[in-house]
Length: 237
Length: 296
Image 1 (cartoon, rainbow over the protein chains, first blue to last red):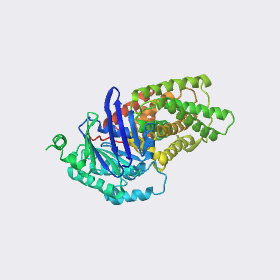
Image 2: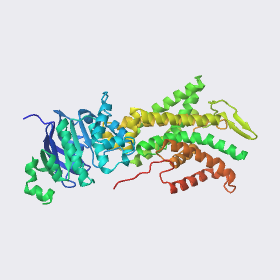
Image 3: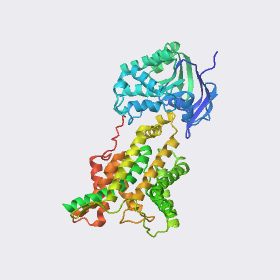
C-alpha cells in the first residue's frame, strides 16, 4: 500500500477546557475524495482546522510524509493544503478577481494569470462579475468563488468545510458535480466535511463518521450508503 | 460673503491636518476594527523627531521624510512588541494598550523636549496665494490640503496595486480566510501600523508648521479628538471618508461657530460631536463607510 497524502493519528484538540477531539485516526490517499460525516458539534470543523494549523493539537498530522505540527497556517498552505472554511470563504469587500489573486498569494510563478483565466472559463459567471465585490454574489456563486480561491494556491489537498451549507439543492448538486470533475480531470485530492450525507457519499470514495470527537464508523462510501446505522442517523431513511 | 469664504478656507486648513491623522486611524481600524488612541501621540513624537533633525541642520523636507521613516519603524516595533501577542479580534486589551502607549509616549516627549511650546520650521512657502478684499488663501492651506490628497492617492495605490496592499485588504475583509490563503497576519498588520504612523507624522508636522501654532507634547490632544470624530464621520473604514470627515469637522469648527451666535467658541468641539451624532443617526457607517450586511 502507498503512503497516504494525509495521515492523522491520535489527534486530540481542545478549545480551552473543552476537549473536542479525543484521539482520532484517519488517512487520505492521493486522488481520493474522502468525506467526514457527523452531527453538529462532533468535531468535523475542528478536524479540518487542526490540519490547517488553526488550533492547538496533540497527536500526529503528517502531510506528504512530513509532520506539520510545528508549522503555522501560512506554512501549511505553502506545503500544499488549501482550506475552504465554512460559509465564509470569500473576501466580501474585495472584487472577484482580487479574491482569486489572494488565493494565489503564496505563489510567485508567472502562471497566475493563466490560472485565473482557466477559472473564468470553468465558471463564466465569475468572469462576468470579476469587477464586482464578492459580497454582491449569490450564495452559490460565493461558494464557487471560495473553492476557486482555494484552488488558486495549486493545492495537493483541498479541505472543504460543509460546502453545501445554506445553498439550494440544485446548486449543491451542480457544485458537487464540479468537485467530481475537478477530481477526475486534475486529480485534486479532497477531504470534505458534510452534513448532506447522501450527496457526499455519492461522490466520495471513502467516508469516516465522527461522533463526539471520535471516529465511530469508517469504510468505502458505497458500503456506508447501505449501512443501516448510517441510513438511520444521516440519511433519514 | 467674504467672511464665509474666509471661514471655508480656514476649514480646509484645519480639516486637512485632522484628515491626515484620521487616515492613520482609518488604516488601523480597517484592518483590525481597533481605534489606536496612541495615534496622535505617535504623530507628535514623529513631529518632534522632525524638529530635532532640523535643529541638527538637516534640510527641512529630508527631516520630514526621515521623521516619517523613523515613526514608521517605531510603529512597526510597537506592533511587534505590544500588539501582536494579543488576539486581534479581542479589543479590550488592545484598546488599553493603545491608551497606555498614549501616556508613555506623551511622557517620553515631555521628558526629552519639555512642555514649553517651540516654534516649528516652515514647511511651506509663507504668505498668501490669493487675496481678494478681506479674503486670504494662504500657501500653507493649499499645501496642507494638497499633501493630504497626495497621501490618500499614495495609500490608495499601495492598497490596490501592490501585493502587500492586497494582503492588507484581505486581512481587513476576512481574517480566517487570509490565514488559510497563506498570508502572515502579523507582518501584514505591522505594515499597516507603519504606514499609519508615517501619515500621522506628516499630519502632525503640517499641523505644527501652521504659522499660528507651535509644537509641544500635548498639541495632539485636541487634534486627536477632532480626528477620531472626523474618521467616524467619514466612515471608519474609508480613506476618502477621512478627508471628507476632516473637512466637515474643520468646517463645523470654523463656520458653524461663526454663524450660530449662541454657540460660543469654546463649544466648537461639542458642535463637531453634535454633527457626528446627526450623521451617524442617518448613516450609521459614516458618509463613505462600508455598510455591513451579515448573512445569518
